[in-house]
Length: 403
Image 1 (cartoon, rainbow, N blue to C red):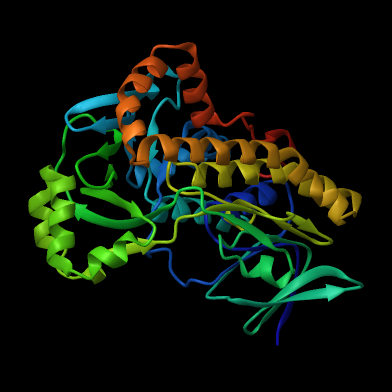
Image 2: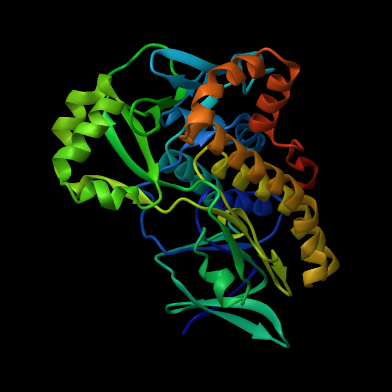
């Protein structure tokens, strides 16, 4: 088995892992990135970037290039009930230049980040590498084994998603919270240009639905049902499911009937939130979905992952410079970041209850509450928090030693 050495072994080539890799490379460190998939051209769900995430990518120098590969700038977010717009969160009210929601397909984002990493001689990319074990020495993590690869590292960064293998191998538990209490059926349809671009949650006679335009000429739709509800409806066959979806998005009814031919054309998402019990061990640190998992409401997953990378970057640089990769030192990242993540999880849960719940009291009060909220200073504060997080994050460009 070939053995290699690196400063940091990053497991997971999603937004968090690639952004962290690029930050470390630009700070003069060597990075080996292990990704279990062999191709970036695979199916992704979330692709909405909040302004805070856009700012991180811009400071890394990859935002413009990713946008040129194809993206939609959405003016904001709307909560719609029937033919009434209950809440119009207009991001154009925020200060520029990132005063929009950006629908950026993940293959475009990941391709741009990977190209920037590959420009550095100190970068090694191992696609198709599934981590099977952590290497340990005197009780601390000192690398990973992935198939035929043994990678020894001063630090291992686990960025391998909500069902993180690295987290499990490290013996770190995760607390799962059923904060959303919904099943989500996710699918993509061809769609024409429809004028003003906004991300919408629509409440109709059946189930709330999340809808937004996606590059280049499609629409992404997330149809929500109570937990367990899909199994009951699916038992009646694809025809009933198709007609319920067509009624939820009538402007796309023809495309629904043409392209949803079997239940296999729909993806049932396991929607939950939660956090790892701890984010660091001796020689190891977790970030992104490996450390904290989010549902789709509020478009926070990619945003928080990119901000995680920016906050972890100076901690890792300092740890490696001090030759101290203990859990105590690496845990500074968790101390800085967990409060903001916890705040966003609570805000997402509140949004989910307000927009997706179905009960007589909530349905009666929702229009009046939406009008009140949109006319108070609270609206601007909530909008700013959704866009940038409780504590806006900046990239430590002063630590860069390489272009």
